Length: 181
Image 1 (spheres, one colour):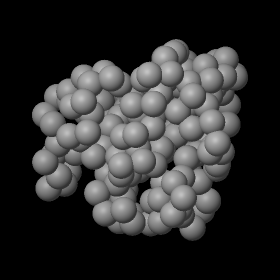
Image 2: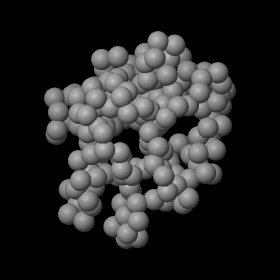
Image 3: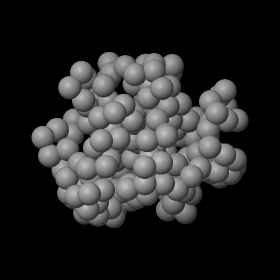
Image 4: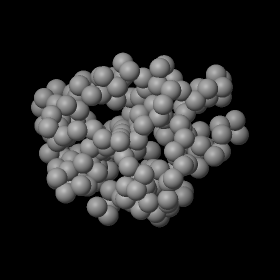
């Protein structure tokens, strides 16, 4: 992000556990492989408070029916009353800086070895979210894709450049949206 924008991001990132009060010092959090999450009720309550105070969570790099079920179980502890919805084409997050009308599956690095863009039974990519009472997106859910790998492997000549470029646009839109909404 620092290479492509003026956003002052935490260099290599920072690991923050759900129960740490330090979570409230960061307006944007990124979590990967959330299909293997098991949030305790105390952790879920802390994340809920973070999100309702204006925090933003982007989740990424989880695939297929099994991992969706694991993620859903934990998120239902965070927000049992809030549905997870598909992000609509005209949603502000998709147009806050870049107009993201192209939604293709952004694969992990396995695309290079296997020649396919999906993992497990996660053939169809989904951009989903959880909204607050005012319609602000609090949780951006990138399901059946791996934007993080596209960022991480952007300099690999073997990784498809169009997917890296699109992944960066999504990430930048998410961050700009989180900072302005």
